[in-house]
Figure: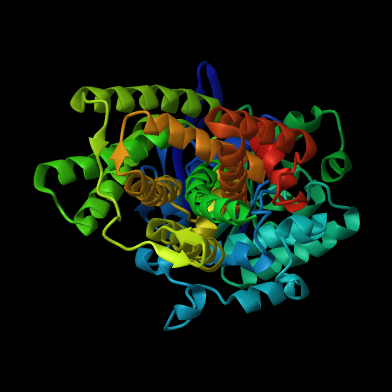
Length: 255
Length: 299
């Protein structure tokens, strides 16, 4: 459903992303892995539209997103979280969700106060999202006053509030403990079970191998492998890219 | 004693106009983290549009008010498109320098189109003076005070209760996060500029109508008053902007009475100095200190 077709992004002479084609199927969790500087973040930024690609296209359900502005892509159903959390710190938890929920709503309604709105809320129910993210008791707390874990949960909830078809998670386990990693895996599955397709970029290999239905591997801006977790673990090129080919399987799993 | 009370009333009235100017600056600087140096000259365009309508057709107050507002908003839209829209969010200094150039351009353009030293602006003198015992209240002063109060409440409600207002506030945090949350950043920034200019236009109209005449010097005057009031208030809070304006107006009115015109200017800069040394968080207090430091850092 999300398709990258021959996508490239060159910065001067640097080919950050070089001729990548990927297809992410509806309802799956797709893991995108690769060493530092392999082009993962650039790929996300090409999908959300921060960068315009040098060549290639991004399509969602057959709609070409390539020429769309970032906020238009959000309205089409692309949402993301950031590796370094970017919340609206001076808004409350509920307001963070409210902004994302209403981003693509009728423009005229933007100037009406909340309680004025007839016909109910637009997009996912904020109260339900707050419960889903275990932030219900914090709904009127300023986002900047949350703990690190709460911030991560809020950021994911904010992404879900825009009613996405596909959610891009940029290293959601960064800064999390092993234990948190387990909870995170459950949360990502829960998100998928809500009907949202997930593209997961992650260094924590255990997490990716454990929950992904398919995995793509990038190295130096090129796709070097794509397949099921088992296929990726057996792939010689992937091992070479990560560890040098001498190492054993366990090293890849625990990298 | 009666002088002090009369000065206080006059000071509060002109101070609410300063507060409105500071409100316009604060919307752009405090909320969006940009300093628009062409703010005063945009308002000047509006005031001269009003004066032109007055001189040409002796139009009534309402069309002149509309022309002032429209002129200020159009000029601000021009400034936004040229100096702010295509300059990236983190290059605030480039925007400021560029808006400084547009200040010069707009002001010089007006000076060429209107070569006389001053032009007449319709005043409220049709309305009677209010006498409260020994105190005199000019009707335009009451209008200033009420307008400022209404606008600051309306603006506060907009920024806290409407989706658009929240979108405006997301811009000062992370434009990238705002975009991926579906916020049309360019449009929101543009509209915020227009709203700030409209508020400035209202203040400009009230100030010009109080004086009954205008000159191109008003542009610099508006910029100075608005900036000083904003800095006193500590940057970044609407309530603070209004308070900063009122304090500035009060101090000016008392100093004018007891020290004369030159003493007034010295007192104002002394106030600015003291405010920066003693109240680095501004009158609005600690809550906004982080936002202010962040704004200054980016500048």
